[in-house]
Image (cartoon, rainbow, N blue to C red; front, side, top):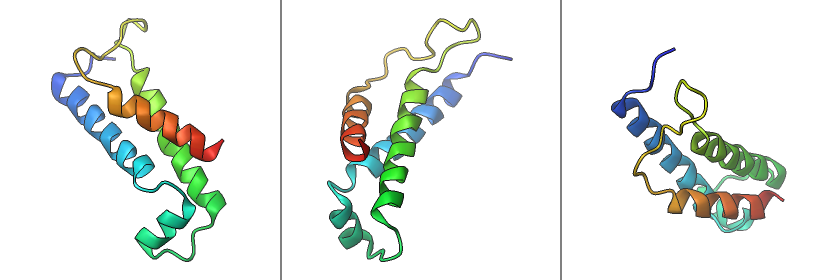
Length: 93
């Protein structure tokens, strides 16, 4: 296995932003339904989607280099990601 390149790391961080957007898009299930006009998704399914995205962020934050101990992250700001993890956990817990 090889170390991730700077471009790969940037792409991973960008994907994390997508999960932040999903988590922060709606304060509650009713807001989700209003925003999306989705009448088929249940609240349980919505919470599961939030949980998957929250867990995705936690996994991304934990990425390590090949040595298994050193983080791949350097100067990236995790402020928005940390806030989204907190928000996500409050939604599905």
